[in-house]
Length: 156
Image (tube, rainbow, N blue to C red; front, top):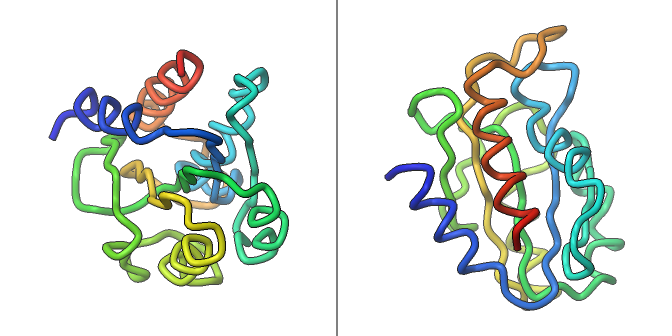
């Protein structure tokens, strides 16, 4: 599926109070895509709430639940075997822990917990990384993907 179709699906799912959670390590190349998107969305619309949780989303669960969002988008670098920079919506039940980058807690468990506690529509917006090597910058194809996401969210 093309990025444009995924972004159209994403836009349609952003209902009510939307919480965007950027996950990843900015020191590990493309793994920093989640936090970078949060950084770029410096002036979001009032209904967009932003959380940069780094590599430890489990440390923010209480703060996230208190926001009572209607929609929750977890953004992370995910290896789903596509071309670098490809964007894909992954439902919470389809999050496979072994395909995720460098995080401590199970994103599958985090997503299910957040859905149970908030009744929000919780899903992962994955971006296929090119490299997650330590000390690298975000690769060009992933940067292009993140720019598409930022532009779409700024128009929401």
